[in-house]
Image 1 (cartoon, rainbow, N blue to C red):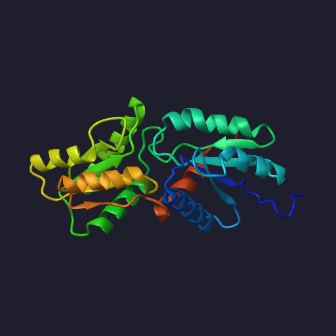
Image 2 (image 1 turned 180 degrees about the horizontal axis):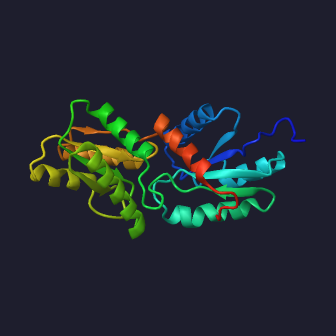
Length: 250
C-alpha cells in the first residue's frame, strides 16, 4: 500500500537557471504554484541551478527520503544548450540512485516543433504590451554560443512571424549578435514604424532590463514582459511532463 502522503503521479521538480535578481526566483515560484493549481494533488517543487536554494539535487534527495520512488524534472529553459546538456544531468547524478528521475524536454522547440502554448504565451504578452498592434517584432532571447540552440530561437521567430503576419527578427542579450537595439533599428530602417519586442524570457532580470532599455532607445513602441506564470506556460510544463516516457534518459 502506498503511504498516505504519496501521490499516484510522481512529483514534478522545476529547474530554473537562477539569478541574483530576486524577481527571477519569485517568477519561478509563481510558475510552480500555477502548475500545481493545474494538476491538483501533484507536488510541484521549484529549484535552481545557481544563485538560489534549493538546488535540484537537494530537492530530489528530499523526495527520495520522503519515500517517493520517482520524480519528473522539467528544465525551465528555452533552448537545449549547456545547462540542459551538462548541468541538468550533473544534478540528477548528484541526487544519487535512490529515486528514478525522468527529465523532460526544455520548453523551447522540441524536435523542431514550436509548441502552440509557447507561441500563444508570447502573443499574449505582446498584446498586453501594445494592444494597438505592430508592424514588426523582435524576438529577444538571452543568447547562446550553441548554433543549434540559436536555430531553435530562429524557429520560434519564424512561427511568430507566421502567426502575427508581420516580420519577426531575432536578437540576443548576450553571446551572439544582434542586440535588441540593432534589430529594432534594422526593422525601422526597412520601413517598419511600430516595432515591438517579444521577450523570450521565463523571468525578469538583468537581461530583460537591458533589452527593454536598448530597444526603447532604438525606437521600439513596446517591450513585452517575460512569460513568468502565464497559464499557457503552466500548460506547456504539464505537456512536457505528460510526454516524457518512463525510463527517459537524462
